[in-house]
Length: 238
Image (cartoon, rainbow, N blue to C red):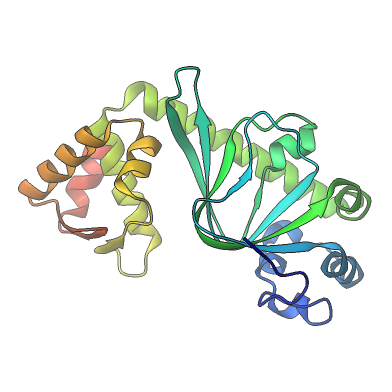
């Protein structure tokens, strides 16, 4: 891990507002320039390597993390040391905001999924500056409500969808995010994807082989070519 201070590609204290990707988040659309100026002075900017741990499940937050570049996976473990990945955050994004706002312990561990640049701001600064802006408070409420909706959808998928249907839904949604929906570069390893879909790696490999054999997709490493999007969506909705 390399500490970068304010000498950061996503903006210095003087020119940060023009360059930092966080400024573009709708969440912060109501933040005035003077607050951003203070933010760029007060933040701590770190570069993290893949596999670094940002925060640990069960620890108490002392501030808020801003993901400027890269990806971070949220990992939960049970009493038998099995782990799952309920969410993967991609920049620009916030990290750990639920525990931060609730003044609660982290319910999961934040592990860096690829080399990332992350800002940290202490609790007092965020509450004194950002939470005094009504637009930001409202945007945070909307964000938490949307996260609750996604959590309910995930719980429903795990309850009623088969492993085959969950994989089909994941592939269809990933394809919809891309400019070229017929080709997908999977960002997750097979092990992480299995944890996200709550299936074993062996079952995941069999399902990829099955989809390939049926002509739905072709696979080369993490590159997936979608050949039958309509059939994928039909399986996802089964």
